[in-house]
Image (cartoon, rainbow, N blue to C red):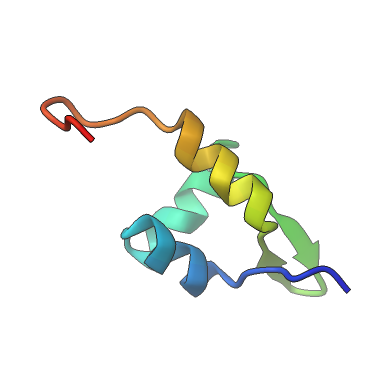
Length: 61
């Protein structure tokens, strides 16, 4: 089975609150896989989100 991430894992990777992860999913910004009554995330989808995510102004990283 594929190595899927939990929402908490994604929140730690993105350095955001857990609810922000669900907000990104709701807005269609972050792809997820629904497994039963939960959502999981493919690592490649999280990496694509990081790559495409707009940076806050003043962030030179």
